[in-house]
Length: 275
Image (cartoon, rainbow, N blue to C red; front, side, top):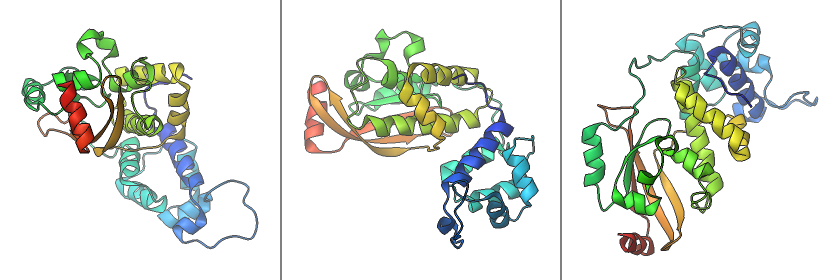
């Protein structure tokens, strides 16, 4: 599958159709119809009614005719389709209704943030950009995951490592969920940064190399996950459960600080043995 930089009109069309087809009339308070539906989900006329727009307008949007809906219409569509907050943001990005930063995506760590990553020891921490490129890490994170210093720069990407690096393929106990959430984040980033060729190239490579990624990418799930829980399978100290937090600095919003904390006493002891 070939992936290109975002064509907002076409991706908007596919996304609207996909979300419409996922909804049941009961989900939006519409009565059930006795006659069987030829297509899954809501009909276009039902979405048009819920959003307060014409059926013809929905048809043209879903055909990717280059329309640019207003912020008011985008909000109405988001409500009609019952979009989650991350999906709503994705829709606004596709409709180009949010200002975009003129700055290029971060490729190196801001020095103050790199120092902060080191100062967070003994908590494992690392700094990434929206592509999951690893920009800085402390020794605790290197011992927990792998020694990023030994990797060529092209492989210093958390998603690439999870899917491709042999040492990382079995690292996450709940790998399906971790990969699914990572793919959903990359899709949101792809819409927010449509001119980022490096991100487009990364997605194309992962689609080609990994069937699981390709399958999940085609599902068009959107999720920006800033807090959660993971269970890791370390080859030396065994299973480690961690809580994670992702922070976005105001001064460098494209850089994300990831911090792990032990979720229980056994995991705290395991992290201590790594140190």
